[in-house]
Length: 216
Image 1: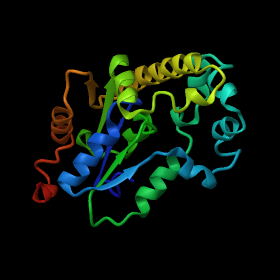
Image 2: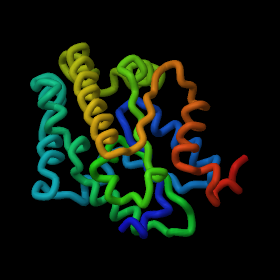
Image 3: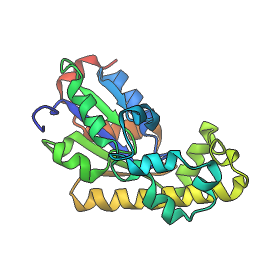
């Protein structure tokens, strides 16, 4: 598996860390094939209640059940994207892609414990860890802050629950990556997009790779 995925790079991390933005920039600059793991709904038809029980339980809930009637801790512990459901489908897709072009995978479902066994070296992956302030600002800038909470009967509480749940996930990602000796970059409002892109390119060793000929 490691040999088959030597041409793949991974960007994981917490929600609102800028993964999609920097991945698009890196893919364009270095001529990488971009593979986003979101939206998660694109994998639904390839799952069953038996192999993805958390996903199918989540799908059966209404919006208040998902975001209001449970604590952030329970939301975190039962959200399929935080616990590896469907990751086998990501790997399946990556193995099916042509190998004539390096691939950049991005998404919060790239859990360090699942990605680590696929890596030939530490330069293949990085995890972005946003501060709570950065995460909230990112949602506001995108205009997506109220997309989910606004579909509940109590948007303010739903937003607070969602942010608290995401904070629990981000903490877990950081601890897991560091425990495995994988690269983590803290993302705050001081770090510009250009600086973040540059740091990730260095971590993923893109500047010294064959992709350098694709730079603008």
